[in-house]
Length: 118
Length: 130
Image (tube, rainbow over all chains, first blue to last red; front, side, top):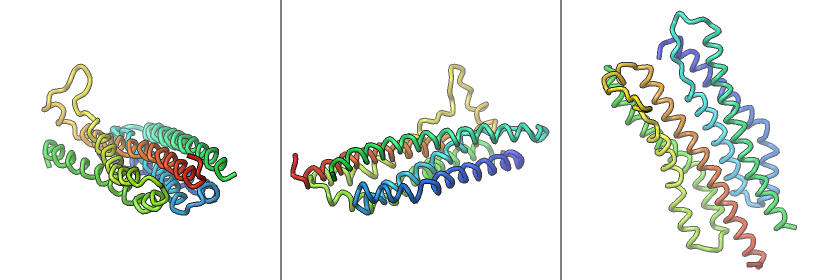
């Protein structure tokens, strides 16, 4: 991987970590409160919280790694931008799918365990 | 470093990194899982969970690494052509790591579901309605 391709790849990695961090920061507080309330078991909240954090970061990085940077030094700036954009699309797609999958899991958790508490 | 040396070295290093990623995720979740399973009434089930949990994270990580093929499609490239392109070899390493991370994330969701079922069962046991 040449210097120019490595630059594009590094930018994509930073962006993917940024997206994962944004998703994590946005839901962090509310998710923790919800898990504490539903599970009433600190270790349980910790477990499900870590599952979310690890999954979001891993899938963000997976999408960045899946993008191939094989552009030539003489290629135009926008070709690099498009390549980064296609990688970023995959990062967003993975983040959405993981968040939705996790949401389904938490919904089952809430429905089933809340009914037990009532 | 020649391309062939790079291929040999990177293949085993990436394989190791994939396995270690699964192992570190296991370490990150080991303590909370142990505390959760303490509340489970069936001790046999707890023992099985504790044995299968690391396996259920490290194996998907390694599977993700192993499923990436260097020679793919109907017209497989000969070995010499395959290793001629360093970019291709680097991309294959990226794919291995990506696939490994994806498999770990999917495994985590499945483990989340399994633990949920265990929690439900233990709460049922506490309420006395078997």
